[in-house]
Image (tube, rainbow, N blue to C red):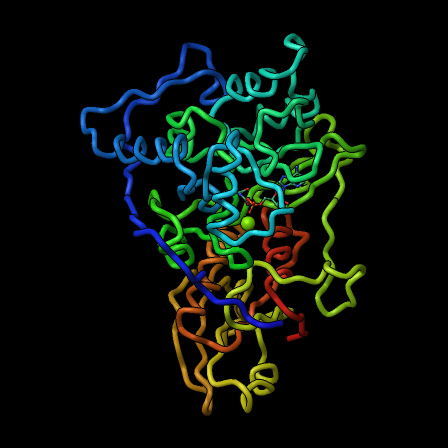
Length: 409
Ligand code: TXA
Ligand code: MG
């Protein structure tokens, strides 16, 4: 497949990056027995106004402009717009060149906000618009990296571009306080996909967003690197049995511990890319850096490296697993900066992103982008056992989508 440009062309704005210190935005206050952020909460401007003012500026853009604003969440950076205005939501698709049939997640900052939104145009004002099956998950995981599918109210309070032709809407309450403050100050639900150019790895720092969308948006709020590093788990509790539509930080094993979710099934397809796709269009790349990506079972061996020596000038390796030392002991790879050595005529850049699954999830997209910056032609990634829980299934899902093939080590 032809490689995509690492930056979109045709920017028309001067993109400003505003660093925000979350501890200086102001005071978050909750009433006595309120659950933090789930129930009503408020934010008072602190004595030092500058960080509050930056979030307020972004909130005003979301409220009034048709150019989306990039902001950090705990998973990845999002590209946000007022979910109730078509012209604003169209601005998201334009900025990141996203196919318009891919629906967007709506981000909210409290449950009262969500309930009001779901009820406001509906005739039924009394029953709970959030289906019972989601209550235990909301109590436990919100605010946090979980997206739930809700029946789309008729008439819908959301711009049709948010949900495409679907009868459901994906909703999540992020836990990053900067994101919560932004949504609350904007006073509207915020539709936000990941803030990358379509097809690229999701951004986990403000500089990743700037790299992809420079000139195409006006403002990036910089709240530092994202804690989780892979996108939210998307669940569908409306189907029987309930389904995971996208694996994320919250695993199948963990979801199964909640009432109503004991039998949750995998609802996404894991077509291996070296198998024939089951339907045309299933085999598309996503999360892809400029370089070719090959997923390797185990650390790439001498034999694998030798097979690329004649055709490849520069190769990147991302290590994730257990390494056996010369004294026979094994150790986990620790996170390291990219280091280079020569192998004949080939430069070999190596990055380790372990040791834990959480570290691997946090470092994966960043490592793919870092190796692109080194201009490597090929990236070999050591796969992990996707059945070990936590974000392991999410990591392998993103790697399969980024890779064009899988090989044995
Ligand atoms: O962690 C995240 O979820 C990030 C941050 C920014 O919140 N957002 C994110 O958005 O990853 P995006 O647009 O890159 O991915 C949204 C995913 C897509 O796979 C989309 O197909 C799915 O959610 N989705 C959204 N609404 C849906 C719906 N109504 N039915 C099925 N899938 C839906
Ligand atoms: Mg995305």
